[in-house]
Length: 536
Picture 1: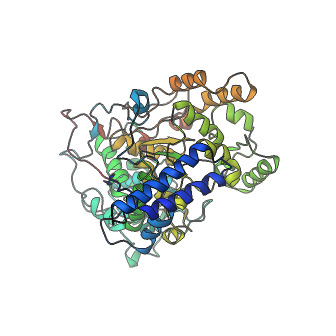
Picture 2: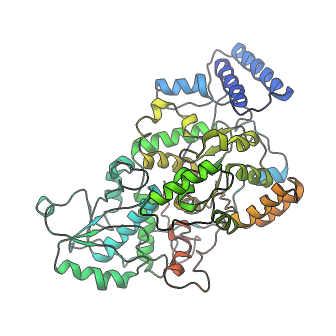
Picture 3: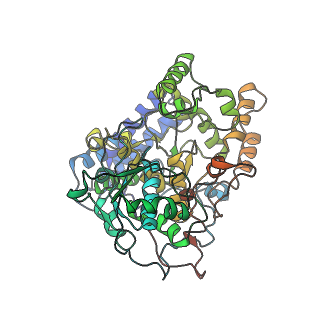
């Protein structure tokens, strides 16, 4: 996805609206309107007046090359951000500030996902593979991509997968609501035969329903699953997550997984269009951080993390965990979870982290998340440090979001697009979206992705809370040192943690889609290099 970064200066009306928006946001967070803010208001007022007198053009901070709809005009006139530092005029002072936005060296790694000469187009299918996905958007995306590879291994015709409608989010989206179905079918035409539905004569036919073994290799599917075709024409995969090994698979299968995940699973056109719009609106602030703030009710209930919550909130989360039957672990020690780094950073901790990294309070931050648990009460500290705190609900109107707002997967897809395209991506927790976005950013050029060392950070933050350490140069130096090599630079995918066994061994591996090197990334001139550049 190529997005324009040029932003035109705002006209007087847009600047006055921006000023109103800015002062209201300050008031909403309890921030004091200081003399500096007053000077900013005067500057905006007069620069807007001068611009109006100097030109008859009604410029705006965001423009479409196509005719604009009423909602786009509403954004320009009422909601557009103040031009504190537009992309054209922003001056970076010194190497330290420039380094805040510079990605880690990519060492010239580029996508190399073209199949080998030995990889042939699919031959006559042995049967049909039905797939029931499970989990949220990115867990389903990984599962679908794996099932594309499994269909190839089994020489099966893949039926468009059924999305999970029974998980925590109760999302009723169909595949074509979230993904570009025609693109998915056509882009995989030389890899796997994909059809929208089973033939009518097989809809009611007996099916072999199987829970494929987790983290399996080619031998498992060829030896244990393939013989099922001798008895049934349809195999149904009851779950899709983690059913294929991360490592030690044939090169062509690994490259197919990348083609499916990074190329074939393009979002549906309406989602792509609004996602692009959100990115361009976010860029009207200048370079921005996308923060995956995993502080929603489901995450906290599942993980048992309660740091910074009230007793009432902690009890509510414990009740949710107890009543969610498919969550196996019920009794969790929140202090132990946090000390091991198993909890997402709180919004307050994220604010301390960004400040320690050196990002100034004028840094635009996009919150990629669902509804934050506890609402604004838990966002006060972060908002006070970084007032330009945006999300899709602020960047788009209710009318623009209405087609997607009742569907968790579609709303998550919008966050995914804005996160992949951001100048810096920072996840507060290493969940499915964090891994998927990090992998995608590696795939499209190793864009800067800072992975917080939560275990080390909570120890430092606890010292700050107890008065043993103060925020400032010393804390900043320690945090910068810890994260110097956690910024998305190229490296091979990590294997299992030493000493782990069984499923824990597979579970400890770095996920395939989180880091597709070496299978799908190579340096030009290497034996595996090709020109297969893939867009999101």
